[in-house]
Amino acid sequence: MNNWTPLWNFCVESSLWDESDLVVKVFLTMMAIKDADHVVRFSAYQIARKARKTEVEVLEALKVLSSPDTKRLEPQEYEGRRIKAVEDGWLVLNGEKYREMVQEEMRKARNRRAQAAHRQREKEKAMKSGKPLAGENSAVSAMANGDHAAADAITTQALPETMERAPGD
Image (cartoon, rainbow, N blue to C red; front, side, top):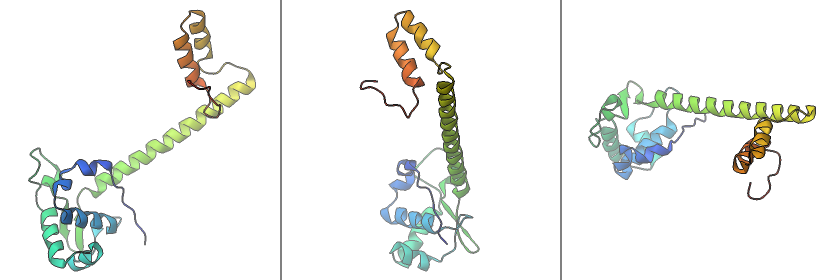
């Protein structure tokens, strides 16, 4: 079964990035192999094989990852622990939080696409009917008042994405 894990750009700003390369590599390996319920169902030996490290090195990294984060002073979820030993492996503690963040980003992206499609349909409908596009009346008023910058801004926003814009627009 294939699984995927988002890699948020702010991970390089976290205190994880201040850990040794060994700890970072073991954690990223665990993120890549965890199940949908955020549990890594492998022994230290098996994680070591996947991370291309020794079992001793992985045990050392697991100890760091399951200990409170001493690099940051402000309060953190789980005291900064990243994993927790469970009966059948290792639970990634913030896994559900990050899954919810992915779901929220995906929802926002769907909404953006739907809104863009709706706006495009409305523009096409207005163009076919001969009715003014959104902002056209405002642009005409701005031109009449001599405010060419405002008129340009309005018309640039009102142009359908499929229309070519002149250089400088």
